[in-house]
Length: 380
Image 1 (tube, rainbow, N blue to C red):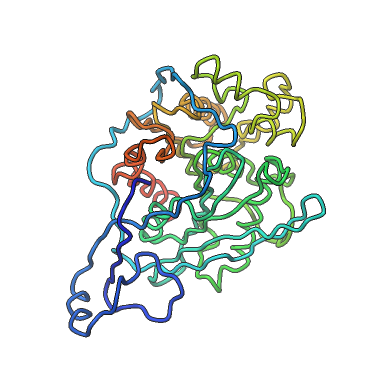
Image 2: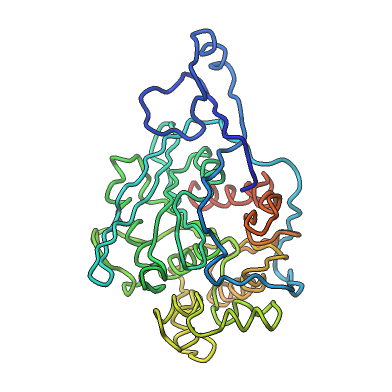
């Protein structure tokens, strides 16, 4: 996200004894201040995420020189103006580094962890599992703290998870299995954590959006179920898909020829995540493998409703990808809505020297579109 001051707030009576609290108190609070704050809630800038060293794109993730205009057919255009999101209306507790699965990769055990934010309000909370981007190369669960906190403050338990990537020689099958493992684990701990096990959404951005789409499309299918808690369901009730790819062979369709060639080269990050390391196969030439990796292949009446959001100026994932997925949803009669964010690039882009780019994604207008979708699918 664009830089924000890491400020704190207290809504009502101050919390004591919490190890980590999003939007927590910035300093000591006197009795008089407690009484004053109890009468009114203060909002502050949402907390910034720590910087991920060497973060995306990096590691061979190309950035297009040119982007074709995207169609807005069957879509709603959002002009991302107006105020930015604010935090502090609700106290949120964070539990960090919870191990949810320990798969073995190449004979080595990998503990996969999650961070869980839960608002301090009464009753079980609908669960939103957040999947960060990272070009299939990395999955830093500390990313995007501001937007995660904003969603949590609106009454959701938000779990940001690690998942396996090409860095461990893993493929998309492993990544999807990890997401489903996290959902099953959280359902198994629902009573202790205060989660509503009947109401679960996946929310992904970029590579995480691809895994979110695969997770929501494969409700009821067993081929991606691995690990523990197999007596629990991994089905989800909603998918938030932000600037994700779907038909991998067409990821760079909207870009210049040089960028398309880099994306489709053998052992690019996309091909490595489909075929594994050191393979010379590509999704462009192996159509069966591309179909197997496409969430549209698995859509059925059991699939979850989708919301798709994409910037029309995305230089990393072709904007037409979300329209391809919308058409697939309609063909299978799965509920889906596409929003085109006017002038927006690929999420938060300070690594491209544009610290202002992320602000289009953190407006109340855009984030409110997401939270209204979650409210509609998980609360009513």
